[in-house]
Length: 501
Image (cartoon, rainbow, N blue to C red):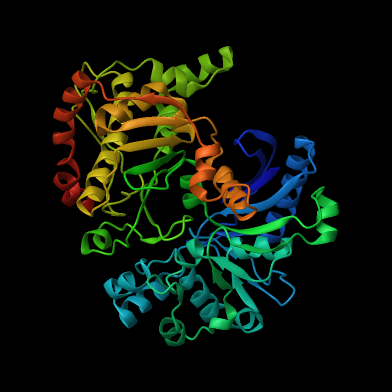
C-alpha cells in the first residue's frame, strides 16, 4: 500500500508518494506567484494553483510507478480565502493570509467583541491575517462577489472539493479562522451573526484524518490514481509538518527554518492565558485528535542571511559560483566558533513574536576597528538563535516546555547552525530522515484513515525517524549564556530609539 501527501503552500505545491515506512517513491513540485499590485494586497490565482496541483500529483504518481495508492490527504497554507460558486469555481482571487488590507475589519472585531474575549473563544486574536477578516473585507469591498458566493473556502476545502469531496474543512484550518469555538469545535453562531456572515456559507468542520470522500473517477483517470482512492481531511501546513516530524506529545517542537523561522509545539489542553495573548501565540487544533497547537514566528529568519550574502558576501558568492556550491555554506564555514563579539538585533522588518513590534529596527552592537564581516555573519547566526531561545522561554512561562527541537528547512542543512541552536537553547536538536515533513504528515493522516496504521502514533512510529542529533556542548553553552543575558536587554534598550527612527 502507498499513500499520497499533498502540500499546497504559499509559493508552490508539491505531491509525494510514500510507502508505509515513510520512504519517498514519487515526487512532484511546481512554483507559482502572488499578486501584490497595491499596498497590503496579497492575492493568488487559485485556478492556476489547482491546475499545478493536478500536475504535481500526476508527476509524483508517474514517478512512483505504483497503482496501489490507497488514500490522499493534504497540508495547506493558512488563512487564505477563496469565494466559490456552487460548482466550486473561484469567483475572485484567493486572498492570502499575508494580505493585510482587512485592517479596519480587524479593528471592528476588536471593538465588537474585545480582543482578549475573542482569543478566549477562538484561540485567535483579531488580526488582518485571519480568514474571517478576509470574508468581511470581501463583504465591504466586493459586495457583488460576496452576494454570489456559495462557499468561502480555504485551500483545504477548495482542493478536497476539486478532488471530489463535499465542502468540508478540517478542525486545524477552521480553528485558525477566528470564527470557530475552540471548546465546542463548531462555528460560532454569535460571531458570524454579529458580522453578518451566514454559517451556511462556510464548509462543515471535521476532524483531521477523517475520510471525507473518494477521488472523482474522471479525475482519477487523468491523474493516474486508482478509482475509489480515499480523500482524507488534512490540516494547516504547520500542524502537518509537526505530525511529519513526530510532534504528537508535549515537550517536542518542530523548528521550520527557511525564509522565516517558525517553532511549533503541541499540548493536551488549550492554552489561552494572558501571556499567550500578549505574546501573539495562537492556540488552535492539532492534526492529532484532542491536542492543541501553537507557534512562534521570526519572519526575518533565513532572509537575514540572504541580506548578508547580497550586501557583504560578494566574495563567497563568487567562490560559490566557481566551485558550484552554496554561498551560505562558505559564509557559515568562515565564522569562528563560539559567540560572536557582535550582537545583531535581527529586526530588519520589525520583530516577530513575542513582541510583534512593526516599529522595531535592526541594529549591530559591539563593533570595533577589529570587527570583520565574518564576525557580523556569526552575530546574525547567534542573534537569530537568541530570538529562538526568547520564544522557547516565553512558551515555557505559558506552560509549554520544549526539550526536543526537530529541525526542517534550509536551516537544517547547516551542522554549524544546528550545534549553535543546541548550545544556545540547551535543547536536544535533531534532523529528520524525511525532510518533506508536511507531505509526510498528510500521508500519515491518509494512512491512518485507510487502516494502514491503527493511529497517528503508530503512523509516526512507522514512518518518522531521526537522522542526526546535536547535544549542547557544556563549555559553549556557558559562553553563549553570558552573551544571551546581554542580548535579552537589547530590544527594550533600543525600543524608544527605534520608534523615533
